[in-house]
Length: 329
Image (cartoon, rainbow, N blue to C red; front, top):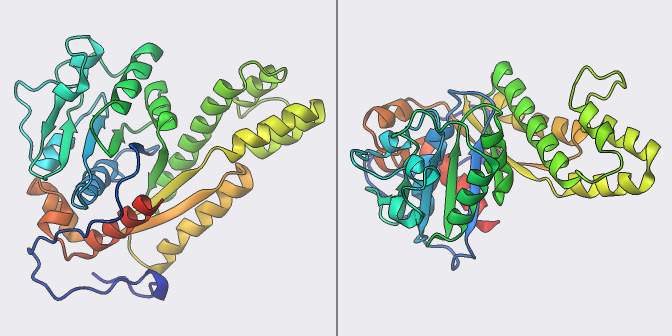
């Protein structure tokens, strides 16, 4: 379904090829050094895994070496979306429990040339919570993998594992839908990530107790947003205020708006970006949106990425647009 009222600069022309024709993406410039993209959000059911698998597929079809990691440690299902059988496969539980040291051995081929998958922790029910040492070891192992792009499909929610994987990536991608509950949860996710990063980078700050106090939204000082916190820090210590501003400037993220139905919902992405700038002081890049499309659930039932099962669908076109922006930096 073509969205009515879509701004002209976002409109994509539908090619006339048959619906099931599989396109080969045009290679872009030579790949840069390895990049890690984390795709997360505060709520389940918003399409993180759907987007992760399709974004990984499109990136691989540009000729890049892509590894997709199912980092949803409590509910891994990326393999299902890709049509990959997992029996007797090594997974993240094997890595966390030291049964495999080289993560390359856990990366398996998928039906998409150039795309490999590290299956989530299917072999152990107790891997949803990880230690800081385990998380650091995983990120270090991912950085050593033979890949141009590593994509992390994160769990929903705001536990420490999810936030740390999100923050350690090079690209921080937040998924939400136009529904108020989803937008509220995305804000909560970004707030938690922001304060998690702040606690790390300013752990030795003379105002660290003030920062810790501000994490409670019911604090007595009336600090409700990072902007409020900045004003309070500058009132106590101007040099630490300058340091805090640098922390804010270094925290950039991307927004993917999923399941949009009309032009008004498309515009919500710009409103969300403005709110984040006002209350966080951070630059949120509205990288793109994907419309509500019946072909999405069909592709999921077929266990194939949308961009392969229905390459000429509107959703596939918008996903390719997102990946193009990501690869262009």
